[in-house]
Length: 144
Image (tube, rainbow, N blue to C red; front, top):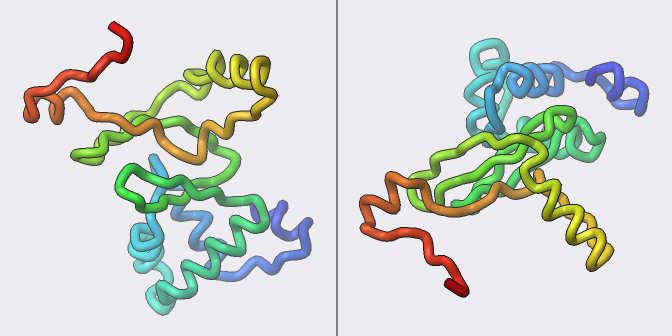
């Protein structure tokens, strides 16, 4: 990743290196605040505004991508680590899914509408079993 930044003519700053390291060590996408907290131990003088600017620069360079969550929040992850997830819109539970889970839908959209699906930009939003049980609801199935 650092080599890719250099190849594009970008400087390798301490903040860029720290943000990339935080994302490399994360098991899932991180919010801006989580990234700031993760780098605080090694870079205590890095302000939140620097993290925002760094993420913007890394996203423009294609190193980082952002993902919108069910609550409207945004998390960041490394672009070379694509993933698909499902997120409960009630409790926020995130379930990592196989990358190919939407391949059939993507093929169908491409064939019938010439539409290229971007499957990693948003999680699949729904409600987990625990939250459905608490609410006493089950998923509604249309047409049945």
